[in-house]
View 1 (spheres, rainbow, N blue to C red):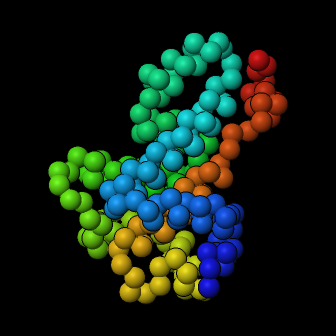
View 2 (cartoon, rainbow, N blue to C red; view 1 turned 180 degrees about the vertical axis):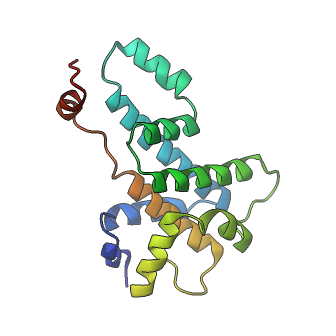
Length: 180
């Protein structure tokens, strides 16, 4: 069995999941969480830059370096403008809470079952992966360690978030009646 068998989850590209797994697996527990946030931050920054194509570059730059500077604000904007669905938004907020916990905790940080229960189990992505695992246990078969559950869920979450792209400029113009 390989990650390619995850085709039971519609839209998840196995190649992208494999790439995310490679990156996240080589990190420490804390590092995997921080790297996942950094990847998602760059995804949302890129999408917002695409959407903010009007105005001059200084105005766009100010928005991205001031108003939308934090990861949380980028995710909030992405959700409010309909770029991402509610379930993905809720999952990313849970991940950001976990990020805040591990980033501000002194000393060694380890992903425990309590961390998984509090932050990963409530995620919609985890529920989707659980359903896929019932068909074919690939990412985290029964009895696997909490770290494997975290890494697998983060990789799928990154892949899923990357699917949501803004409308092409012509479609935005048609739906809003506003042109450049």
